[in-house]
Length: 506
Image (cartoon, rainbow, N blue to C red; front, side, top):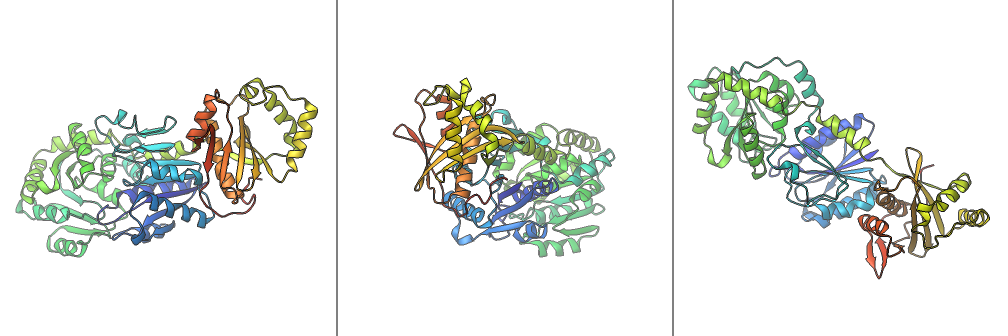
């Protein structure tokens, strides 16, 4: 399975989107998938870090990006150039929505959206929101297609496997604070790390061991390195790869909301949280209300003195910190990424298309004559065997016709026929009896559109004639991206290059 991930990192955006996608990419690779990334070349990007992890990165030039349709065009070009159409496209980007995802439909089988804002519609097959907040259960009710699978909550948090491994060996925390971890994400644009260091220079905290972590994209990293060197018992870490170990050794953390929250929760690390972005506030407030962390408010409203006072309270209230640890561990167990990979593997069975062969002659005859197939056919009369044989054998040798069978796990589920005329193809479709009502019609149509694009690049339009009272078929074509034109349905294929039958399943 080929997977393409669209995510960005920068000084402004931060590194959370890319880092959690890297975790998913590593798990997918371990399951046998081939994963690549598409990222803009923003200041503070992690493109070289992604490549260092062994993943291909297709860069989007900075001066040519900016809106969803330009972004979609770059993504389509990257897919066409690679010669490997992905089975899944994963998007983790606040600037991309259903418009971008719909533009990707001809280029992939399935789309997964990672989101935690619930502020825009998605045209996806799987939605992941790994956060926990009030109203999450209904947040996407009007934003997703009916068939979309929803993975909601911290039980699906994308954490590296070392967090689950470390959790298994973790001893219960007694709430005493002897070592503190400071981490505000990879870029920390408002430099909350320096604020925390200022608070921790107070004499009351002189004996506290301190680990300070910054990302390679942090513009203040050298200054922070010097500040750490000037404070006793302080260790500076840049682009740490052992966060699970650092969190396990710490007794208290000071940091931002966002994806790191679930790493801390999985290891039961009591935390003082400062929100550095608007999308962190609701989640931080919710987790505070659950007793899983203490939320100190927005970064711009908090100074070093207030942070120091909150730290002093924690040092003098070990029972509160111990309770915070227990509450946090109840929310996330570190196994979310395996659940997501399993959902991708089993939740959306992949349809494979192959050309019909002589061995399919009898099966096609039986399928075509089944009452549920004839019900919505233009000619609903049964077909005689002799007529079917003549038609079928002529079809196999007809250069202007493609007869395809769709299979899931080698079981036939549907039939597609394309009659070619110049840059047009007229489509006919039916499901194998017994497979209706599962949404397979839409999936089969989408797979067929991608097959045409890959194997018949001269075809620019697909046309379908559907009986007016065949409402299920009309809905399936509409969901597959066909537009109604004068009573018929038409699909326009985005440009691409390939050769006849070069990716057909043998």
